[in-house]
Length: 130
Image 1: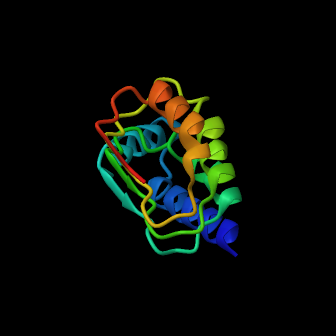
Image 2: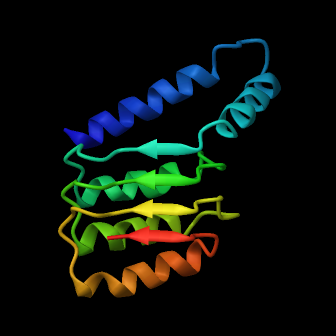
């Protein structure tokens, strides 16, 4: 389901990067340049769940200039937010994520610990909606 969609997204993303087959260095340069262009990723209303949040957190490692991540209206629970915090904790250096949208998910007050962890990992966050 959703994991396959995210893997397909990542594969398509890699395909865009590897269009130029001249050399590994050229591909790395193209990848870096392309990563700098994606500022907003809107995944709202895609029925994303807790396991998907592991992949999304890991995906942030490639999207170094992402400023807004919209995950509104999915099926993310406290566990999914914890998964996101764990998977994005390995980012080095942290990106430029300024906005994280989580409204319309199944989050409760118990998610506060994960939100605090995310804020520590991403001190550049200016707005978190849940």
